[in-house]
Image 1 (cartoon, rainbow, N blue to C red):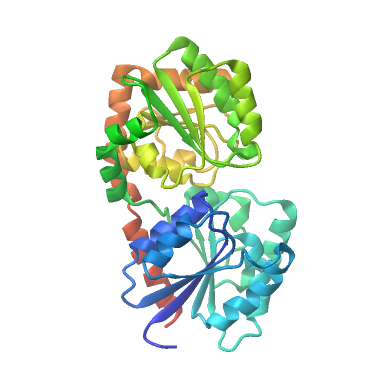
Image 2 (image 1 turned 120 degrees about the vertical axis):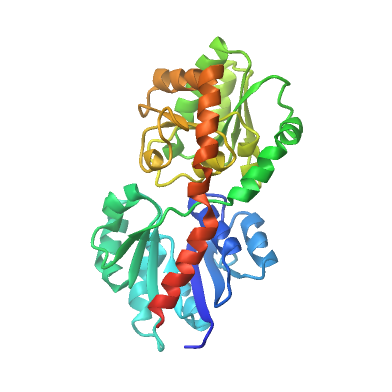
Length: 363
């Protein structure tokens, strides 16, 4: 093993999801004095994150061009040819494939799993439990994830809240007026933003129903929903049915952190979350968060301090939380709390922590 540690970071996709953004932001913030990185992904529907990595000199191996049914079978060979010292896998299915395959490699890399979710499907849990003992270290991205079923049986477990580019979010907040103009937000509007894939877990149905109630009570409220996914068209139809002029679907928004930083409020309507990156991006920019009380959200959102938490899947409760956060006195207090919390989520500390972890495993 040379003086420079070669770390291979394996992730299922390089789309703009939470785990993907956490990984990319960490690598961009890494000192890289004694560590070089390669990222391997099974697919990427866009090139925004991959281009950011390549622009920073980080190699990206993207298997999108490979037929879908062959990506997992080919993954061990791809990683083996890279001859990494450490392999950190951020998705449970690729981890279950790589662990037993690595037993046959010479030299054998140290295996790390970073767990981003509080839930896996049952077959995934079984595969993870059967192979997880091969990991040298498991990292949970929040205390909630560490307490969940997805990290049970780990030989050695650490909790590391990853964080975001705090300085970048603060710079974006300083450009809020320009971003609001780009998205044609009416002057004087109270901007509520949601960023997330249009999938069942994000519960856009709950969000648009609550938004309709908020706009009916507070016409100055403007909701911008960024993201793509299988439920996008269904959500658009429901917004049209409700006739809520204050709700717009933007589609995918590259660099959505800028949009979050321009908001007056971030809303999360999910049925569960691990540790939502969007919440940390909002707080880093001094933007309060109203969210359903699920998963790892309470690890970052303190009710009455930097945001509000509501009952899951309750339209009235979510609408009431947003309306409460819109009150000038409440909003000013929550904004101050968000600004005060920003330092907790600086990704640079996590980047150094991982490099120290890799160095310790390779001694």
